[in-house]
Length: 342
Ligand code: CP3
Image 1 (tube, helix red, strand yellow):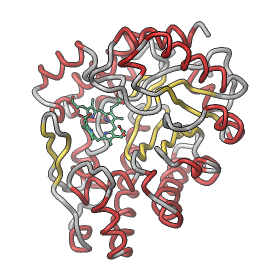
Image 2 (cartoon, helix red, strand yellow):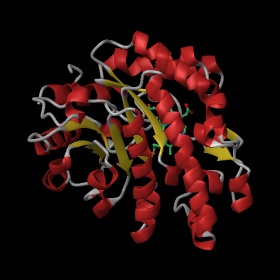
Image 3 (tube, rainbow, N blue to C red):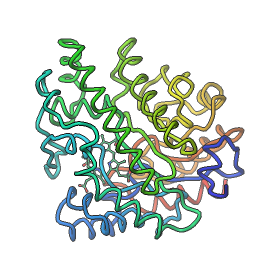
Image 4 (tube, rainbow, N blue to C red):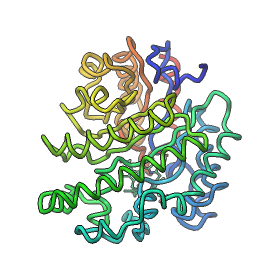
């Protein structure tokens, strides 16, 4: 096994950590903006395999990242389950809403998702041919809770209020929705692996708003079920889990879910994580993405501090959340240089 990301995920400590970046193909890059304009809009870009492969490769050509992440979106799964989906420029996603048991029952069955998602598998097939031989190809999906928050509210929300209200009003129907998304996600990720994904990542961006038993039932349980199904079907494929802002619930998360690696958001203290999480296996993270806007000595110091904190165990360097459109591409180069020369 020569690819550095796969070695780190297998638990190997490397002299310098491999690096990639959440949202590495995105609006901060002029070449991304050009291809997106060519595609028309964001969803047309996601469903155009040639152009989606092209934008996936852009940050690899520019920075030589150790991993490429499939260009797609977590909200394609709700769309494949039958929801309407569109993006309002400058505002974000909009979806038709699922608000009760009837709405859950009306969703398409899990194995129907391939009808909509076939172009995504084609993007992966193109990438397996075109990626440099040392670059790892990462597939992904949203974790069920985060996907459900968008399906219920029909948009992003600051506190996931509509999803909490649905859960508290009708826990059985809410659990059915989580189960339906979980089944669809297993099908989707399994097909991504068949098409060439070498690692998959589950994004639970809103895990931090689940507390106590809700965290166990809706952050841990569905992710555990996805990982165990994938492990059965594809025993050699590692899984990265990202329970963003889970705070103390990061502790034991990898063990409980079977994840090979936990991705850390930027609120997690690196020294604490090295002592309490890295002991269970690989960790990924966790530079604050605002350094990609502000740059300078603070970027260098903070990057070195993270590399140094995780030096004694398996680590994949990344940001603690996605890079923002106002980031300066030069600052990304500075981060990559700092990691590789630390
Ligand atoms: O990381 C990557 O480069 C791979 C592609 C990727 C995208 N979205 C592309 C994208 C991935 C892994 C995602 C995940 C995603 N999408 C998440 C989970 C991770 C996170 O950021 O917390 C969520 C919550 C979404 C839903 C989503 N997609 C939102 C809320 C938005 C709008 C916000 C925004 O930044 O405008 C998107 C759009 C989106 N997804 C863009 C990209 C590059 C910007 C679209 C554009 O070009 O206008």
